[in-house]
Length: 260
Image 1 (spheres, helix red, strand yellow):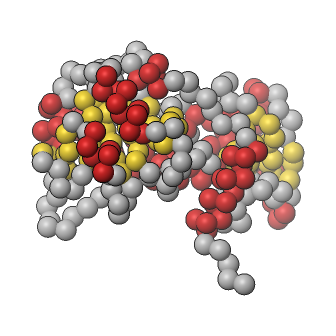
Image 2 (spheres, one colour; image 1 turned 90 degrees about the vertical axis):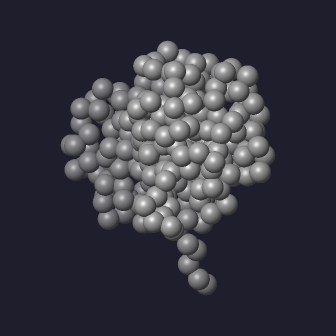
């Protein structure tokens, strides 16, 4: 029987974890930041002796008794290809509250949000969470279905940002966009054929709340999502066929919004 692709295995594990209501985080950085997050409900910590030594301060601070594991037979239910560095932590997913409350929460500068239209790769979403934290976005918002759930792979790519950067899953992205527009947000959809460049869209957003919407690689924004956007903007490229990965496009666009 042919071996399933890693991405399929990851999705199956994510579905099982979601059904169980828990998530397995892995890697020293992701586990350390989760241990340090008082909002995280921590259930089970599995570490090798070496990882326990490296995480000793974080473990002592939460008082969670670790299970010391043999690195040759690591018992946490992770994908065999996961680079866990000898540390895995079972947790419950974070509850960040309502979009309406987070969208206009106090912060430096006008509110900025990132909305993801069916971006399902956990590595892309993790990288976007990292950029959102760096550039001061209030939250990253995605639909409950057909988007990357909170997983160990996402958390590891986010390099700790998942513990600090709100990642909200909403029932319907279009309805969320309409809610934000009613709250005064300018909604900017990123599209390769957008009528204006991202710098021009950023100028329109100067001094007011703005939400940046990015679509999945390949399909891009869905029809209804495009229709709901106030502006469709593109990132200019030096060559005729230049394009960016969705996580890179998010970083460039957030920087542009932050410099206006």
